[in-house]
Figure 1 (cartoon, rainbow, N blue to C red):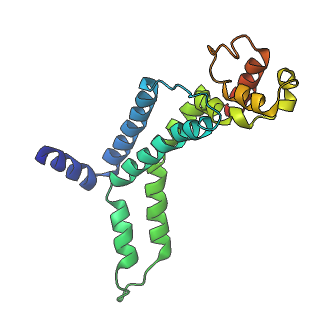
Figure 2: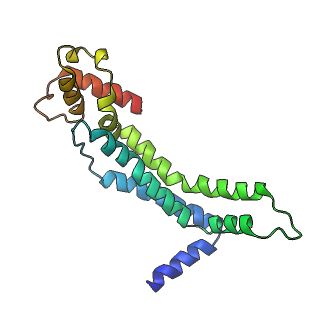
Figure 3: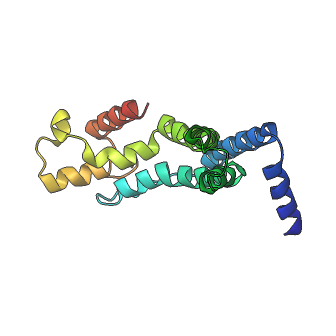
Length: 181
């Protein structure tokens, strides 16, 4: 534990190049994490959207938090903002610059995660398969609204018996994959 604390203090106190290297490693870790992650959509009408958006947005939020905790600049910006006025006036531009600098660096890993997720398309298809307009696809014309919702929820599941060889499922999947690209 002591060793971890010493490494953490070293990273916080050292130069910008070390900090940028840490942010780069965090971005590479997000790529490796996504490649290890096996995404499997639940294919249930009410859960697809929450599950897909959760995988798309929760890990980037955690990566952003990690990125913000890696540097001392947020603490320095807070100290600058809270210090008494004194003889030297407070310049809001300095605080804005420090905050934007911290956010720009911390956003690298979350943006990499979101880009990889959207290029892969599985999470996007899972999240938005239930919100596609069924009138655009011919295979849903004779189905009741409940059946349409069930069929749309099964779009991400290629091996499901209900939609295995359904051309409309393939069309909806391609349509959503194009939107995610």
